[in-house]
Image (cartoon, rainbow over all chains, first blue to last red; front, side, top):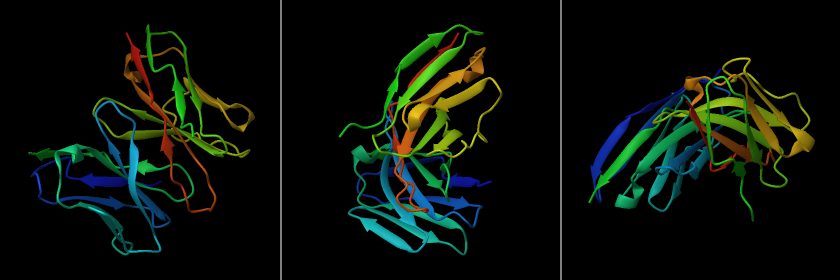
Length: 110
Length: 116
């Protein structure tokens, strides 16, 4: 089955800096790669996703890149703000349930 | 519109008791998923229902865990003879599979299960 690894497990940045979270996956059949943000005590919320037919996608301060050959994808947050502080999960999927990474706790210092 | 709902929001039970957790997916969503999230951990896949197909039970950790989905809508996750290691937040998600590869999932608020 699919295996998704996520790094780093924790990340602390200064407000205004950029943050990058990286994930690798094992199943070459995976074709959908969402990123979820989970605030403390809340449900995971989709923030951006990418499908295997594109290499990059942007939405305001958030971007995701995908390298199918290397089987890795990354989340980039620019101009970080304190409200970006949360746990971020990457995931990979083909036709069934998502396989999640172990999460990255992002702390944005004001 | 209404999102995914789950009940109860919190459940405290004694070791050895059975519990039932309920999930109401978004109306019209054909796919329903159960995940488990232990404290400070990632999301662990448990079971997946898609339409009338046989469910994918490959993530269930033991035969004490079972789930059903009645009428293609509401789902119940049952844990028999609960153990302390079953303590976790159980999350349900649903999705609308309009295309084979499209799989955006919407999560419910979860049920926090505590086994004493």
